[in-house]
Amino acid sequence: MIDFHMLAVQPVLGLTPYQPGKPIEELARELGLEPAKIVKLASNENPLGPPPKALEAIRRALPETARYPDGSGFSLKHKLARKLGVQPQQITLGNGSNDVLDLIARVFLGPGRGAVFSEHAFAVYPIATQAVGAGARVAPAHDGSRGPRYGHDLGAMLDQVSGDTTVAFIANPNNPTGTYVTRKQLEDFLTALPERVIAVVDEAYSEYVERDDYPDALAWLDRFPNLIVTRTFSKAYGLAGLRVGYAVSHPQVAELLNRVRQPFNVNHLALAAAEAALDDEAHLRKTCRTNREGLMQLEAAFQRLGLDYIPSIGNFITVDVGREAVPVFDALLRQGVIVRPVANYGLPNHLRVSVGTAAENDAFITALERVLG
Ligand SMILES: *Cc1c(COP(=O)(O)O)cnc(C)c1O
Image 1 (cartoon, rainbow, N blue to C red):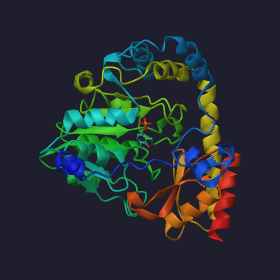
Image 2: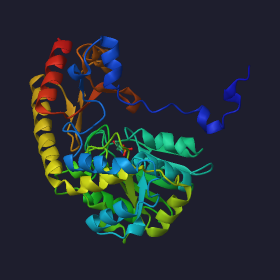
Image 3: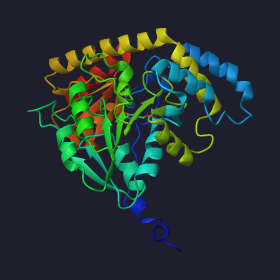
């Protein structure tokens, strides 16, 4: 028989697939438990569920499902543009912001080109980079002396920019570390970055952030035309299962991304739900409050248990369990709690825990205490 590896293009042979959080149904099957008994804090999803207004919009949109969606996303783009204070031509919609990151890689990366990102940065950057045959340069993260430990060191990232660099990926805040770069740090970085390098500022968690020194990168799009800001409806907006995200950029960049975009990359229900989600401010406020309280609850528990954690401004927190984390992860699974090991991010003793409802956080803390003995 043919070895199909011989047929695959070279970049694909070196790829390792993204490891998603373990689905509830899968663990329920393995443990012979009711899915409702399982606590999943593994994929930074909204523990309150989708916005009620989005659910209503989905119900209204269902009868039109036999038709192709609006491939231009006209209505959602216009609504987003108004909300964000940009032009609709600056927006690119994606099947999740992951899709947008892939579009960016296809347009601006490729063989002979390179991307720069930080150690411990979101796992999709190396995958998107390698998938198109581009090289990756990884900057060491802060060691704790000049910035938050494990956080992006933008100075070190600048040092990695070389003649073939065409894209720099910055997650703000970063997943899985929950760390962020400040307005001043990002502004200095963008000022120093050559204009020929596309700066992708991934703001998947921006709606959760409550820090005065967190930058509003969108406000810099005119000043730095090489800037792309990406956001998503998967996290605070509670629509991870529908897959909608977007980029905001210079219109010419958006036009280029549009050339490689699948014509109907965002589905009909997702378009309707995302638009309605933008109107559900009550749900967003409640989401952020639940998250703020949940973070405090988890931090207090880690302090009580004497566990180090990485201070987070996202909807997750990464904790050092003081030993190899995979066995702890496995033991938590047997307690019906799904979290995320992050050894693949260079953090072998850490677990990433999404912030759940107070009851879910409690269940996790109780299980963790039991497991750690
Ligand atoms: C979750 C996440 C995304 C994207 O999620 P989508 O569901 O594809 O929109 C992007 N960046 C970071 C840092 C994330 O954690």
